[in-house]
Length: 609
Image 1: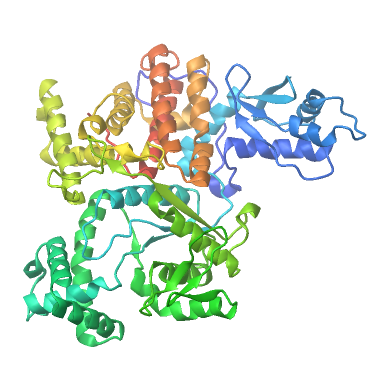
Image 2 (image 1 turned 90 degrees about the vertical axis):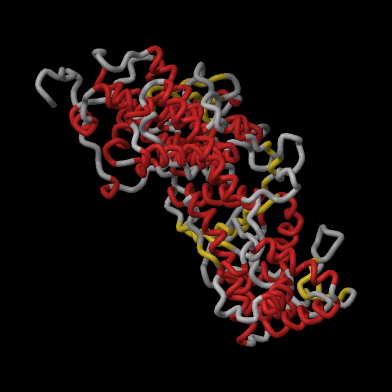
């Protein structure tokens, strides 16, 4: 420390152990579950899963809710217990000694209320500051997952539905990756099918020297698609040539394969403009990749007698559904179901994934229900009621609406181009930021590149957060004015809140790294403790968001964290107070957790405003 800096008389904390020195400890809820499991094992001769939940502050910090369920099993049988309360008392009494728990009490019908030790909360936060936020990664029961998301169609524009899939899928991947799950991020693009016949023939007609023509010759791929579709619908001769082109492409004829690759490459460049802006990483394995696997996969169904003839098509009858799953069309071609079955087979048998997650709109729910049931019927997947791996999940999401309450489109009823939408978010954010800086006289302190990168972080972050903060199953209204508002539950408000915390630390003039080594966190004020408790619950929030595939759970936690910090900062002076060192460490811990939340949501933090 520099000369003249006061040193806290609080004893420095024990040097925390590094993550490599011991096993991962998991969330607070998981740690309490292990303690309660020991107690339950001492009382009952069979395995019981502890029911642990955070509870209202007036009762404690956490609650064990097993007593009533156990009493209903024991009632009328010879037992030492008189009622649910006596079971709760026994659970509390048999808890092993632990630095985690300060005290317990038993309420009503056996609810075991648990209050955590302030000293342990402080130590737990300090360990995280020294060892890194990865210290708080939750422990999940899965080691490898496939997340299938984004998945646009070649030669078609990415629209707001793809935006939702891309944003939600990226956040789920990030949360699983943080939880030490190996995630295979898959972009299942629509790069195979009958539409390529008309696209290729239109390419040959419009550009006889198409192999030498640059991408710019084709120009707007969306317009190119529409023009080819118009010809397909209106010109019988063109339709016949297009249908023949599909056969020639699928039989592997060089000229047609090269033309197909050219169209796919142009489309990918368009998609990449969106992915680069959103900072999303994906590995493409499109429909064409799985096409060679389809015959063997369907033969597996055929051997089990599961494929039937129906009106010229080949189908799998699905229990609980009135319609069958078509796997070979009347014309002998494959479809979504046959491709999806081949992809699932590949993911289970080649990629060895335990959890396969599909992120698409809720309108595809029936397709996934039927396709998952077919996979269970052939023996690929266990009964979902058993909650064992491997397993599949469909992550459905609602529509993006305009201010009129209808599907979000441009005034000309065209689908909104995602690149233009994201660029407008950045442009609006930049205009608002410049105005703010001009009004407070700080514009001269900002370089153009910093202004640009900050506007980008806020603009793109605002679009992502406006989507993710909603329960994904609901529709949400797209509004630049609302998402770029700096008040309320928005990315702008949260990014500014983070920047303010960074400013508090900077103004103190203290070196956080020195404070970590020399000072302890003391939770003396109720608002300090409330903030500390909320911080250490981060791991179980990520665990819940992963388990239920709900990013909005993390958004709610982040917003509440910001609100709790505001209460703490309002009632507890930081800089210049006797508790300055401890409170600066709490500020730093809040900033670290906020930054990890931003990272998991795919949002770039800002450090000054």
